[in-house]
Image 1: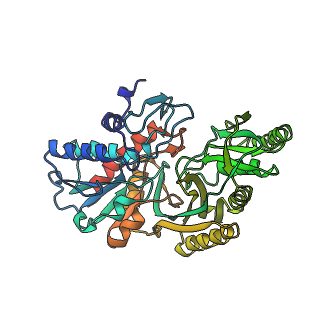
Image 2: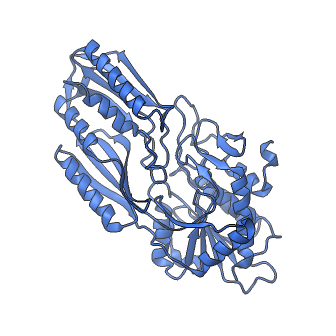
Image 3: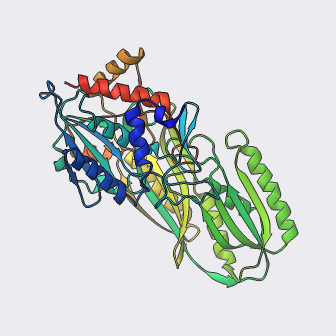
Length: 472
């Protein structure tokens, strides 16, 4: 089978078109303008705001004029992660789509089905005048994968108070999502302190670990490569760090990290690092088997971070809890992900994304992390907080359950998700709008293993078209 033969053809056509356009978070101008031009060419009412959100409106099909309004909603940006050694440039290169049996994936990068599939569904519907539906509109936002800048700066009055909102940003087939966790970015940092070097140098590199979505896959027992790196550093004595980096996005489990360290006894240090390397690989051989750890002697550096700072950073990273914090009846409630190391001229910065369905639990997590790192002299500040979406039962949910069962012969599951959805923010203003999230099966989101199930895409699009006819 070739890509052009995939069904539904109209959905995969538009997914292919948007995959040609760069849409990394923060670089959405081109895809936003593409959506505007799409609306102009079809004489559809639209607006584009200052943060590049796009709203497109289509009149009801004949005979459906009295139906209540439905808003289809998703985000245009994607998490941009590539394999080690890839020369892909997310600012200009198209995503190279690959077929792997019943799955669609990408060559050496994230696929962008999260949330490109929402764009593909919406464009297919807007482009087809044979589809039966009531008054319909589409909202595609920016920056969902980073700061939710789009929905945070949205004038919700311009959405015209829809009765129903269908968020197409869930990733499990046969599941209707009616609630989600809120989130918060937590940064702790250390002022740089340099000293002259006088020892031997070793490079430690962790790469090709699975990583993944820090909400959906935080409980999958995958190695956090930043944690693993500092565990290795901590196994040595008299270490001074020369260089350190790790992670790609703060909302992805780190799959890679790297440090160059100064050691006093090269042979003894290399031997110890090999021992810890084998321990780590053994611990994760079942859940994260493709990861690699490379250790080698390298050329001397002229300066290093002070021994005191190197130790305090190491202690702080190891002290900060990472992964699942609380579960209830098998569902994730609270978690945190030490996702990224950043730096500027003066500071080394560690970024944690904490999630919880309960706002107070999320803030308690922040306060706990503050106490953990304050002991080691770190400064902490939090930002980009967004609310969770409390579960709601509704007429919309009832109609979706019945439609799914009529089409496929079984009831869909109704769940909340530990991932973040824009419904939490939208619900603050659209209090009377009934909301449910759904979507086709996506595995490995936020990692280079991301893949979209083709049959699930077909079924979910069929479900959406039938649902639009029933939302009277």
